[in-house]
Length: 453
Image (cartoon, rainbow, N blue to C red; front, top):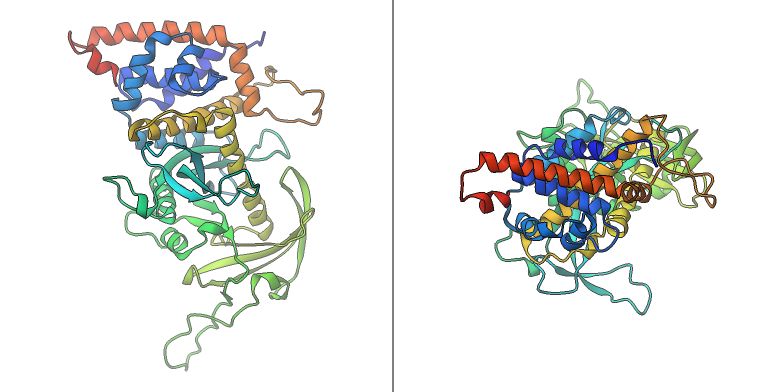
């Protein structure tokens, strides 16, 4: 038996996120997220309630997912604010955001919002090249694990927006490109969270339609620095020479062209060497950096281009960032941490069953995705807080992996299943208590309407 009482910690964590729900909505939200965390089978509403031993709440939770009051934007902001309050939430002075898109396969054409996409990973002959899926553009926070030395960052999913192909746009929806959805999500989060922000994304989003709105935002939005991968044919230019006192005509906006990224060794400056934690272990890095201009970002945005030779990798890393205060080694470190978002997608799909959903209409589809983001982030927040308790030993090092230094989402799931009886009893008692308090405040005849949130 673990020397901790899990339910009070979990309940307080979820209630701090659910402050913008109505009181009946708080009950259903806590019940839904707890069921997703405790469930080890298909992560549907039915199976989640069976894991909680509360099948009688099926109709109320279904109505809540379909028509209940759901403050999506406030919930995203509250989750981001809770993560910002964690120790060591900044990384090299920045609030780090990772953005990428991922597909959730849904075979039926009757499911709202699904589109057909070419599956570029279908390399084997028994996999379809064209799939029907939801395509989500997801952003989240990357937080360093200062509590444990030489450990990877933690990814907390915050927000997701559905992308639709223009030719398969659902009725009533407005078409937005993936780049527009990424920029919009980042700007919304930056409005509610003060401080310098840095967005990290792969080369697929390294376009002017992403980079320029972030570094030169419209009125009412704040600047967001970026870090991404350079294409091999990227056009880089040196800074223009200072204008002389007697020079006439328009000042030069671009300096002489630099060698392409694949020939970054020819850039001006000296090679530097250092060591940094990258992709699972300390690695030796040899890099060169240059402050220049990038055609994609425009002539009015200085960037730092980095070419790096990383131990264990044959190909060079070619990166670019508008955060000039970062060193080349720090840029390589942060871009390597971006891969933790892929681990987050894996946990959402394999551990929390993102592709096991059975929702067919718009509201349940969007709310199920956000509930899974909250569940994964809350489980990782709980794990970090338990780590701070040195006297609490709640996960074990397996004999086949004696070098393991940190708990995984699977360890948190095992912890929940170990405390299943406590969680079921605590949740039932809390729901009954809250239900009595709500019924005392709601006029007669309006219980069913309030139950939906």
